[in-house]
Each structure stands twice: as C-alpha cells, then as structure tokens.
Image (cartoon, rainbow, N blue to C red; front, side, top):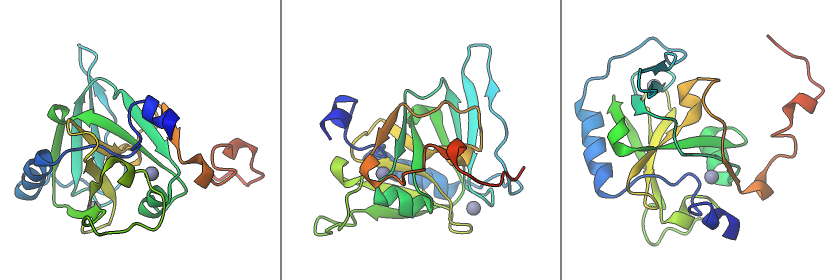
Length: 196
Ligand SMILES: [Zn+2]
Ligand SMILES: [Zn+2]
C-alpha cells in the first residue's frame, strides 16, 4: 500500500471526520428533503466562475447531496471487498469534496465500519486502513450516497454513481486491484450483446 500512501492516504474511500459527522447527520435528519422523482440526478450546472453545482441522490430521490465548487481533487476507484459488497457491484468510485461545498438533505441511516475497537474485520478493505468510516444510505431505497471517514476530517465522500453524470471526471486513483474482476476495466473487449 506504499504507493497509495504516497498518493495521499491509504484509505481510498476514506473521507470525513468525527465532529463533522454529527453536525452533518443532524442537518440531514432535520431537514425536509425536496423529494425529486426517482431517476437520474439533474445535470450539473456551471457558474460564471467555473464552479459547478452537482446533485447526487439515491434511487428514490429523498436523500440528496448538492455540491457546489470546482471538480474534486480526489476521485478514486476501489476494488476492495467492502466497496464490492456495499455497492453491490464489482468496484466502487467515490469523490471527496470539502465539507463547506456540501449540503445534505433527506433522511439517512448510518452504518459504521468498524463498529467499535473490538470489531475484527475479516477482509481487507479500504476503510479500516484509515481508521474507520460512517456510511449513509437511504432507509427507503438503500442507496449509499455519502460518507465520512476518520482519515480525512475536512471532506465528505460521495458515491460518484449517485450523480448519474457521465461527464463526471474519471478516477485518478485505483486501489485493491488484487480483488479486481479480471474484465472489470476492459468491458469494451467483452463479447457481449450491446443493449441500447
Ligand atoms: Zn432513496
Ligand atoms: Zn474500497
């Protein structure tokens, strides 16, 4: 993991903070979400200064995160077992945004890993390397939208898929590649029937 550490921290998914978690969680629970119809998030909107307003939301739309600012500096792709299980997919992509750029609306249920100091996680994962993380998912539809982690107190992690934005910048980091499904990053080479 030395190379990952050199790139700015061993915890790929790790974002977040301790005190900030409470504050942000309270905000999320107290606010009334502007529920949007299920489906894709709105397209990003660029300001005159070049900043973009992006919205990430769960499948049902009640949990949404609005981010305003420049493109994130850190976007990572992770193949670890945690990211696979959590996403229900074979890898996960997440981006870190400074907390002051993030506004959270809607209810979320949180899940902490590890749950306490005695919690022995049986598989390698990107979170425990950084001390732990708290993930927030929609209690209605189950989408994990945002999270915080002990490794980075200044930023909030957002699952890139929740932006449903193909123009979102690509990852700059890739970790836990020993867990990678061999075809995962070479889908154009697959012999498949293409469904429009
Ligand atoms: Zn939902
Ligand atoms: Zn991971």
